[in-house]
Length: 402
Image (cartoon, rainbow, N blue to C red; front, side):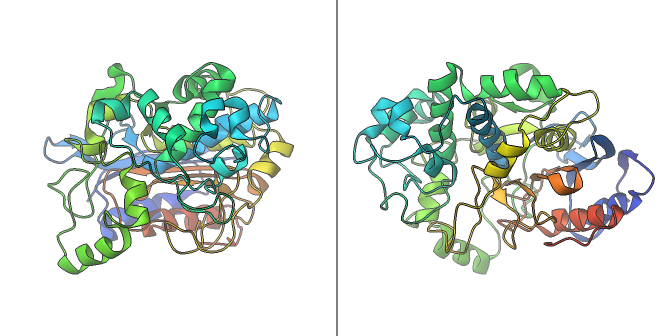
């Protein structure tokens, strides 16, 4: 039986039961879940193995790379600048980043970067790994890149380019990189262990990612099931829009030795995909985003007006990259059947493999789940789904989604 560590407040034992079920029935290897309700931490659990090969247990000190769950942190930075009046979401990106206007992009508003309508899910330029991790070469490539579709006429998941696009706007306004701005303005005031650009001092704490049941493989291991491999090739092969979006820029990062398990990749700033945190900090981030948390600042990161703007749905219809309907606000997924965060007014972000963080302002929830074994679901992973159901059961609310 998997050893579970941490704490659960009275009334939330069902969340612990759901967490244990993930190990018993869903093949969980190493994971953590945390929950804030009304600003108080009521669940903080971890269990399993951080590294089976090394025999290292998953502990309260373990950190996890969370892929696109990082986008929520990036979105929060842009929304904070908008709240302060430093960023106009409807202004052209070129107003803040003049070089961006090249190749027919002069009229693209900032809003479209955040809700994936800019038509820039990949770049045609070929970059080396060093160039992809250095920031400026990718920014130059995006400046030169013409849109893949007419901006504003549809949306498509900017799986990796989102981070450089939004991050460069934050940098032009604040004078700080996205990772530094997030640390200064959000992570440090809230007391989070959450980095976009992991310091060398924290690298030893990271649990390596395991790909889709290939427990001996790295994060880039291919699925063993040939039928699954064929399906993935049709859906996200190298010639598909999604495949190009996931590989941007030119497969330099995803194809690197170790992929996102490579310490150099974790150390760079890739604000769409390489955030490193734990469930405790992810839940505290979302608890403090739209509310206040014990021991944190006296006011939420985002006020009620900005929360309403951030969580207002911006997209309708099929996603050009993911093909089915996705629901984006200003940088966050808005709760829906695609993003089953429970409450109708909830918003947050999910990452490849299954990690998820969200806030439900209506019910005072900040939720975080991280894991090292990547699942196949793009959203709605059964592991996080069971946990979210248990959360709403514990507070006596019937979830709108999940």
